[in-house]
Length: 121
Image (cartoon, rainbow, N blue to C red):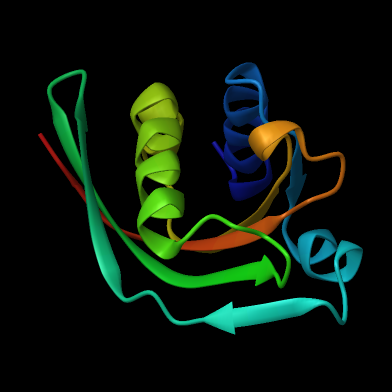
């Protein structure tokens, strides 16, 4: 399966959790100017279906008025990955997602960049 297909499946899986998702470069374009960028540098371990997946949150970019802190965002991303982990298998590289519908937000309030590190069975 090619990267575009995997990204499309992942986007669908994320949206199935109730999030509004803008994939890739469009995520950065959609929410300009008001953003504060914070390096995260935290690793996420997600287990499911006999696999353990490791990700590094390489960036969390958020709108300045957003009240969530990095730990809350990290917990939310981990929950999303646990819900959709099978869609990551075979993925390589880095991807960004703009997440909306956090506390009822109408506009994207976070862009989270994930680097896929490895999947181990």
